[in-house]
Amino acid sequence: MKPSCSATTLRGSANDARVEPQAFDSVATLIAAQAAQSPDKPYLLSPDTGHALTFGALAADASVLGKHYAAAGLERGQSVSVYLPNGEQTARLLLATMACGLVVNPINLLCQPAQLRYILSHSDTRLIFTWPGGEAAIREALHESGLDVPVVVTTPDATDLPVLPVVQKDARPLPLPEPDAPALLMYTSGTTGTPKGVLLTHHNLAANGANVSREHALGPADRVLATLPLYHINGLVVTAIAPLVHGGSVVMPTRFSASSFWNDITRHGCTWLNVVPTIIAYLLNDPHGKAPEGVRFCRSASAALPPEHHRAFEDRFGIGVIETMGMTETAAPAFSNPLNPEHRRIGSIGRPSGTRARVLGRDGTTLADGRSARSCCRARTSWRATTRRPRSRATPSRTTAGCARATSATATRTATSTSPGVRRN
Image 1 (spheres, one colour):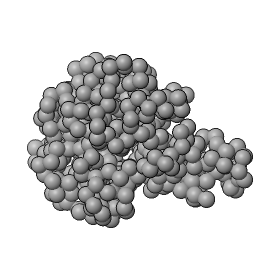
Image 2 (cartoon, helix red, strand yellow; image 1 turned 90 degrees about the vertical axis):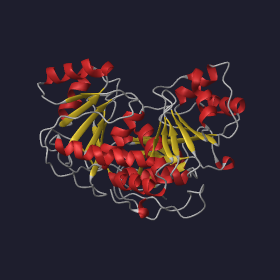
Image 3 (cartoon, one colour; image 1 turned 180 degrees about the vertical axis):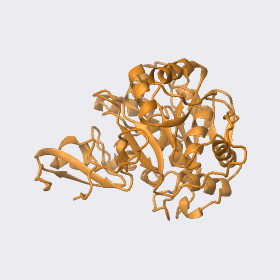
Image 4 (cartoon, helix red, strand yellow; image 1 turned 90 degrees about the horizontal axis):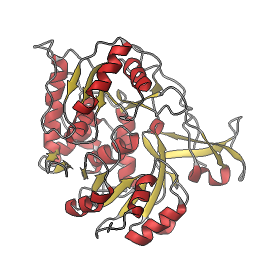
């Protein structure tokens, strides 16, 4: 994998990522560039096993996995599903699969049987990775859907690549993906109906990894504790892809535990946190929790953070909270409060981060302050398409999903949607 330094080189000091990256390429070039610059530097640390995955090892695994995929008969652009809890193996498979030019489909472990059947069929998946605890659900869903798809069983914290079936011994390696090639197929929760498949490109993911790095001034010395599942866009982009841009690292336990949260942060020297309001509530309810020195900020997303929890967390643990907002359709963050605590607003999602936003009426005109309407944003990170049926995944569609109600006085602080042709006031 030939490195492209322009993919990740940031102008400024080692810890100052608040400048424009020189280019946005692909997950493949992000991995290759970090491997070329810091091959022996840990990228991912597992507190459950004590093992560290370096940038160099991640790049080498991606190269080997690409050959295994080719030997298994897979072709560029086809889908591979990952049904695994967090862990080194899970992160390796998600990132390396995208780097190989395939489309990775992380599946929510909380999917109901009907949703799982739908996703496996709708995604047109050609290979499925799971763990012993999820194998029965996968095989039952395949059987009930009448699908014949290879299932590879591994463990989320495994340190070696799993063995894939071989159908073509002399297959050519898969070509590296282009920036506009599809990389990630992620399904929404489906709480209001059938899950919607959101297709994001390498460019989308690399761009928002850079947005996160720049917004929070992250650099090579920074380390984040990954408490959110990688099958959610927040956990994948913010904690797994952003460090590939700024050269930082991630500590990845298999699951969140309030009792070990602060211990993991202390033991591994984490400098920032990425959580959701539910985790903040759990931490506030733990009477023994004590934050260490050196944590720069705590980032909260995925739902509104109650102001009383926001204030209580900062008062008790002495760590400032940065509230943000994003969607699967925008490759995670679209809005963020500033890094500077003097400019943050409690109860607000902040201002556009890597996006341009307006509040528009039904006729598409910008509304005056105080009017209730839809907040719309435009960004390099906005999704490419929604999938419609197996065998015809990348059908371009107008990106207008996810609109939310807002007033134009707080357009950039309350809600967002994706729509072409809009810009920030």
